[in-house]
Each structure stands twice: as structure tokens, then as C-alpha cells.
Image (cartoon, rainbow, N blue to C red; front, side, top):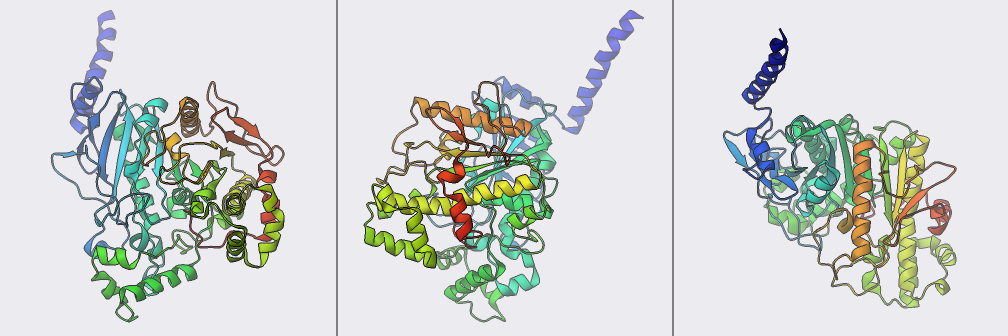
Length: 530
């Protein structure tokens, strides 16, 4: 009798393993790869994938999450990818979505670009149920790629799954041609629908990689951060994630009228001026023709009644959003990189810029930011634009979320002398996108120098904060400076600094938030998130 009770558990285990192998829910090569004996293989709903292994993690690269948006699928809602037979190689990244060359990446003319990359730590099985960090890249909705971000360090340090994605950009993802809008109101938000399609694929398949579809945190920077807020306000994204991280992104989108105006300017530039045949005309154009004609095109997402029934900040105000915990913040000197070309800046040129940017409020702005407080007017105009477009909106939107009973952790990245683009000589401080090299070691970019010892320590701390938030909805981790959730009484903001992180309570005063909220209600819709 005794031997029977010892034998039955073994039989159950053997039967379970046999059944799992039969269903391909686990893969023996996956476990072998963790020991360095082979390539990791997982089964997705579309078929088997073979990835690659390094000393700390495994990666599955260039995984299709939607069918190629080419031919009749150009400017169409993303559709499910095809299945395949055999084992698909997932050891090489696939093409970035079409874009012109910029400081954020080279030219791409390949519309077959709806791919994602998955990174995971070693020794993971389908039973691991690890939290998932889902990253949406920035680039003003015009450029960039998920390929720029290697999730190996984040995955191994936090023992979590990392997903990075591509999505359609520029005129391919956000072209609100009135004739198209009349057929499908969300046509100018196709890029957002791509992001949601990638999220659905992740929810459906991440278990095969050892992830938990119930523990997905969406995150992004700049346009990616704006996308996170858009997804939090989108009813079609409901249930696809449980938390959000917004780095230097606003909760203000374009308007339909402004998006349609941008689209009309573009269709005129490319020669599709006949309203009766504009859709056929655009469909006949090559990828390169569309890119070249759209070199000056700009459009944010916009409220479309389907993906975004309201401006995101309005949805949050009204409590009709996907209420999740939020970690959000901005960089201390966001706008310096946008005005580096003005340095050093003369007083006369400063006044011209101020009048152009602030119109009838220019005199009030100049009085609020006296030039006598700055060693060069460059620092004044940069501070004004930082506080208007980022600090005030971050602080106000966090407050709106608090009123909607969300838990909000707010940060300010303040590495004042961090490595900067090597080609720029202006003093950039903690500039827009500068934190990316701290969250993503090895991030794409030509920097003036590598991170020094204190910056490397800050990088590890930021990755730990972000990882704890992905894991628990709370960024605090053992050994880190206590990060208080913001509330109307303490208004706590964590200042991230190489010399040591510290909680500050004067963020609003330092960035003149009361002044900006008295001058403007929200930033001008359609303003570029660079």
C-alpha cells in the first residue's frame, strides 16, 4: 500500500508531461537551451518559433503579430498573421515601419513591418507566469522602432518578460483623409490599432514564453508615452493590460479637424487632388512616393468615436477610462534638445521665438521667466517650453488620475550632466529621451560618452523601480529610496539623480505649473511630441 502512494504521484507527473508534449504546450528544446544545449523553441497560435540564447536571457525576434499591411491591407485594420508549418526562425529582427532617415533611425521603405520582439530570462517554462513589460517606442508617430530596444538586461535583472513592438507611422498609420474617415472613422488611428493588435497577440501567446497575460504593463516614451495614455482611454483596449508607464508623454491628442487638414495638405502634395478618386490615387503610390510627399506630414492620434471616443484627459476626467495604476513623469530639461540649434541665443532672437510660440501671452511668459535669471536666453526658452508642454501636463494629468481614484507614482528624471548626442554641443541637461539609455542599457544612439559609475548605478535603480512596478503595481523594491504614491496632500515626486534619488514636494513651483494652468488650459492640440 505504501508503494502505491509513492507511485501514483510519479504516474501523474509522467502523464502530465506526456500530455503537455502532445499538445506542444511546452518544448523540451526550451529547457535544454537554458542549459546551453540548444535553441529555445516555443509554440504560438501561429506555429513554432526558434529563438536564441545568451548568457543572461533568451530572445525571440521578428515575430509577426499581424499580417503584412501591404496591397489591399494598406490603411486597413490589422488582421491576424498567417500560420506556418515547421519551425520559424526568430533570431533576426525584422524591418522597421516606413520612415525617413532621422536621428531616431535610418530610412525604411518596407511596409511589411508589423513585428515584435520577446525577451525572457533563462530557466523559464510555461508555468512561470512572469509579469510582462510591453514597450511602445517614441518618435513623434513618425519614426523609431521596437528594434532599438534590447530587453535582455531588463528581463534578466527583473526576471520578467519584455515585449517591444513596431507599429505603422506617419502617413501609413495616422492619415485621416476625409474620404477615408467617412468610410471608417478610425482610419487616422491605424497606428493605435496596430498597438492594440500587438497587445492582443501578447495576451494570447505570452504564456508560451513563460509570461502571464493577466500581468501586462504597457509603457512608452514620448509618442509611446502618449500612446499609453491613449490606450488607457480606449474602450477597444479594455482588459489588455493592468498598469501603465508614461515617460515624457501627454494625454492630449490631435483634433479630427487638424488631422484632416494635415491629410489634405499631404494629398495635395502627392498630387491626389480629386476628391472623387483620392483613395484610388493614394493606393497607387509607392512606399517611397508616400514617404517623400509626407516629409512634412505630422499628425497625432485623434478622437474617432471608435478607438478614442474622447480626448484621453477628458476620458480620465469623466472616469470613463481603463482605470489602472500609473507610473508617469518627465525629464527636468525636456525641451533643450528641441532648441539646441539656437545656442547661444541672442535676446532679440529669444523675443522673436517667444512671440512666435506664446503669442499674446509672450509678455506674461517673459515676466514669469526673467532673462536675468539665466546665463543665456537659450535656458529661458527651453525652461518655458519644458514647463508648458511637459511639466504642467504631467502634473495636471497625474492630478486628474488621482481624482479618478487611480494610484499614481510620479517621477522627474534629473541626471543633469548625462551623456548627450555626440553631435550636439549645447548643454542639454536632462533632455527629452535622455532617460532611455538608463532604462535600456545599450539603447540606440551616438552618445558623447558611456555612463559613468554613478549613472550606471542610477540605471540599475531605474530598472529596479520599473520592474517592481511591472511586478506589483508599486515601484518600491528592497534597498531603493521609498517612492511615495502622489496624493493631493504630499504631491510627492521622486527625483531620479546619479548623486542619489530623493523625494521632492516642490515640483509644481519649480516648473511654474500654477502659472501655466492660468495661461493655458491644455497645450495646443497637434503640437509635436518630439
